[in-house]
Length: 572
Image 1 (cartoon, helix red, strand yellow):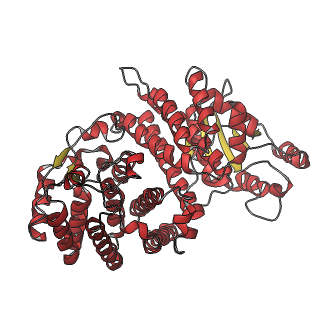
Image 2 (spheres, helix red, strand yellow):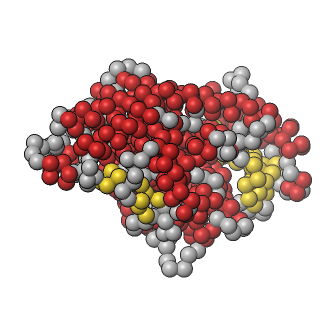
Image 3 (cartoon, helix red, strand yellow):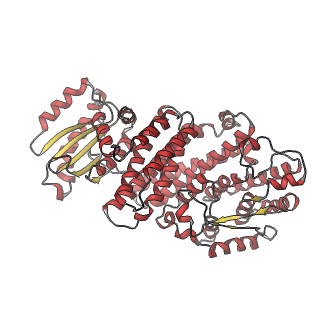
């Protein structure tokens, strides 16, 4: 396990990776981390700062300058302000005299050179000479290399009494099966379940430790996936882990103490990792191919057309969810001059997501004909995301118009119209020629058409709405059009999927005019308003609801679509 950790640390980058892990490690060691890397903030050589005592040493201030991988000559003083020697000079001459909090000025300071790999012999003497020249009784230096970091991670995150031997075995199995994402996901899920196998008496400190352990395991999984050039397993286990970490952390959110703050901070770090995995997945694997006709379809390397269809809708849902997280992140950053740069960058990324989604739909005709009714989940997430900007409305209208036209044609010709079949082997064999009874048996219920109708009604796409009415009348007379609503039990099970929850509004009145249809559906939103009771909504992490719905294959709550209507009227 130590070898796995060493390889993981050596592969971490400096920004948003090694410097993101370090604060959690220091907190787990009992130190008070009072400074972390920040956006647009000059750090004067200090990436992370903490106060406390390590082992039996007296209390000190620990100031970390973080570098990635092995420390070599090019990292020491190669003409860049980011090199190690200029950073150490700034810590001594600027940060300690002017930026060290007043309550820590009377304590000794230890400057820690932190790097994920080893220090090369070519630079060892330079570093040793610098340390000997500037060390005093009140200022000491220490090297935190890959060996020391891996020992500390094993000691404080993954020690045997906290991470049992079977967890370590499952971690190794998950890493060994990266080329088989389903198997890797299964092993990691078992590991996660063991970490959260809490006793009946819920303990905040144990929950914090479990979430931090899970966070470390996620980083290891991600870096190994990145090195293997196969990010699929990391993507899936990160979603699963964040949802279950949220589920276990819920009882402590409203407590105002050090442990509950640590839980929230680690969850935020895990969510930042999720955004980072998203960015890598889409910028490296998806975006370069969205503008080319059939490029993504071919890249799936399918054994049949069903594989293309299933994967394309899955990618569409992921892409839209990634854009929703970016939109949430943009909203969460205060409007001021210091944040203008990062907010503009986020707006550009959101626009990139919009364009990539529209190009993907335009260049992959399979996205006009969903095979499974529950692909409505990915469609609805995509429609909601595109609806954030009215400039996308024409593209949304075109997509839905072409989709309902294609579905109508498939019903008329007994093609692969949307069905309720979930078994893969049955899915690749349908449709079978036969009686109307067969069609009725595989189209008993639908969330797809209600979602299309709802978005069509909200945006005023009259032709789309009428086309769905026609499909219902001509081919799906006995199909139960329905919508899902969160219930009193949804908060308990949404994030873990351990049991069924929520309620269903059945036999929706699609035959009515769109204004009446909207009125009936939104009235139910007001009467079944358990969405507001969800912790993800209360604590303004509302994309968690979208993520849980996509991951566990639940329809997104209609309340989010109602918000589009309110926004159009200037009420949101």
